Image (cartoon, rainbow, N blue to C red; front, side, top):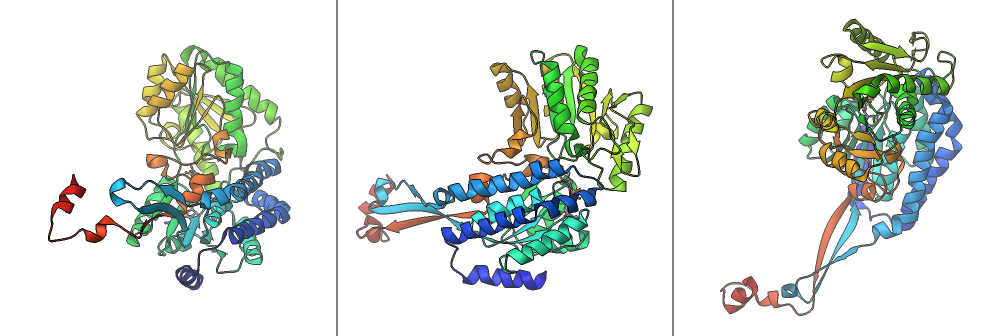
Length: 456
Ligand code: NAD
């Protein structure tokens, strides 16, 4: 790791920045690598999880990476174009512009829940911006991480892109390397450690973290449609999605109907749990136990638990879609990010109460609100701050190539994807070129009338 780091780092200091054609060629190599190895990635991820729906891997990981590459290739020329800036009359004749230059060497630390998309998604923007990269994927997806290391090594030279595999110790050493930028996707707790390690080197960080993303159902919206959409966003990847709706806020008189409806939609999507290839396993025994215990704790505290099937299958680490009404406020389900197929439903009497509930907590990564009324949408957007938002749906804002994706406060800092991603991994370098004749040539002590004219 240190050897490759030193080699890549030296190259970023010695070489000319890559041209548009070279950047596009790297993106094309990445695209061809993903296409050629798609089936192998899908199989490796599924084995790592126990079972991961092949369609989910193709839709939510492969397609999103390929879409990001296509968007970057299409717009890269425009993004790279220097942007001309205004020069005040006092400084004329002169020209000013901003060049977006590569930062150099960027580190990527990725989690296990979407191991392909969260390793290669950042890489697309990093390569588009003309950088070199090192990737540290998660130790919880060892087959995928190994396959990624092999396929990257076959596609890129070691000093262009390199994958480092290993556990938390390797990750810790990785985050201590003096990268020109470090992007970390993972939990808020580890994010803190990464930022501390990076601070030692004054390495800027992008942190893509987690949190409890709420879904708010308003009175005016069709309950069935909202329940279907929330069930879709929650039970995909068995809830192990950073932007999954964590809990739902529902008008109090609709709580029971909403909960039943979510379960009915889940049953239609997953008629069988244990043997269903479409229903993803919980990634590890530790996470499986954590989730089962959280539901048990809520039930013991008097919560109502509804489930779309046999609730647990410890062999396959599957937990059926579950809805919990009246989960205790001080229990695990309402204190911590759930990251599993369990949806607490909380009743509210008026929207202000629901918004106070959201704004009184850590700012979440995502917010979902279901209302067709423009003024209610504006009220919710203004009062409940989050990283990103989908109105009248769930998850889909992350799939927009032309919008930044990221968190705020404890859910992260700095967005990427599309042009914002290109800029995140670029240095916006301001250049002022002074013209042939310039009044400032004559400016300097001893101060005289010219200084007073310029200052006025
Ligand atoms: P995690 O924080 O446990 O691990 C993420 C990565 O950090 C792994 O590669 C791990 O090896 C590494 N790591 C562990 N200890 C480290 C240390 N001391 N220093 C540096 N790196 C270290 O997260 P996870 O369990 O893999 O993923 C789940 C979390 O990620 C959830 O909180 C989820 O919300 C969040 N997440 C966020 C996004 C987003 O885009 N914002 C996307 C997916 C997941």
